[in-house]
Length: 597
Image (cartoon, helix red, strand yellow):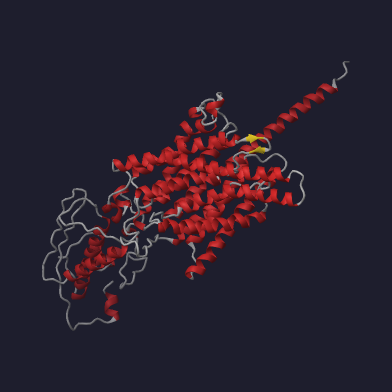
């Protein structure tokens, strides 16, 4: 009987265990990346709520569809070209310094968790710009810049900074100096890129009508959004998403100590946001005497943006520096935009560009190998203290060089594109469309359709029992308003007849109001008036409603047909007559209730 070869069996067993360990590690990392990516993808919902709440109700559908298409356009562009330009293999070292050129359309590619994670980053970078041009951006302009950013601008920047062969990642090596691009989660390549393009877009597209007075000495009129709860909900979702945005950038989770770094990144992210929010809140209260909600949310997001660069390599105490600095920079840039008369409804430039630049700067100052630690080590008597200080300041300088490169690259791409769109009239909508709102004209869908509101009963009537036939016992006027308008319907008594006619008149007024507010903005016989601000529009509406109410008591026997030259609209012609009520007849409560039966 042959003796078992225990040595060979042990070696085979060890190989199988190593394979199982590698398989578990790969699956755990993939699951970690996919989980973080899903949370980051939810940030698109946060952007949608934040932007929808910050715009007027007449532009809500428009801003929501843009946030929807961000994800759709970005995935197609990043799948076709973006990934290849960002992380594709590049055998030529010289070309590889600037761009990748393989794995187009994900050919011969298998690392889908990493692709999905990088895709949601690309979508985030493109989404930032939509807030800066809200309420006046032409739809063709939006599709163009979203496609270019997610397909070309952002991917090439990530190759520079995050690919091992990118020129920013390689940095400069000379003697004791060894610099590299230090940006853990995208303060520069994601947020500074998107924020810079936001500034350019807001400048070239111009301010919203009525945002800034013609006389520069007058105070600017603030155009308020329509829903503070929407904006607040969006802010909370973005805060939640930023925890995964920064923590997930670790990419791996199975090696010893990686879980600790993920947790540290999340703690530093929320701490930086908190210090930024509190700094701005106090500063705003001291200046205005009010505890602002919306601007505090923006300041918190600016602090989280600033934490992206160094959240993995700074101690929690350093978040004071990052957060306070981000809050003050946001305050300064937000006020500067108003002073420069550049209209940025969401403060995208102040939040993302300001926070992104401060993040790139801060990581070289208070990171573990930053200026503060180098000076501290030198004071503590380190033998190579001078070399540490030289390295730290060289790294700070390289961070600024990379920041300048990001801004320059973004401008070089988008300036001619915006200029061309402006030349062909596709950069901004017309004044008439902007004043009346983009929802109806561009999408045919109102975010808040008037016919969807109301309880369905007259305020002065009591609803019949649910066990009864409602239509049988409704007043005549109510029947007519639901089914058709027939003023010649016979009433049982004078009171029912009066209620019928009043219901018809109310119906006419409501129909006319709906027609005026949601009708086409096409040509008509009556001249169109362009309102310069919301107050003028409201005053005009009140005057029109008052005139319509007064005209109901004219002696005309028929409401004239409304002229209509636009084939897309429907004219309203409802015949009615006015029946005078008995002057002295009054009904008791019992008699009024009997009318229902």
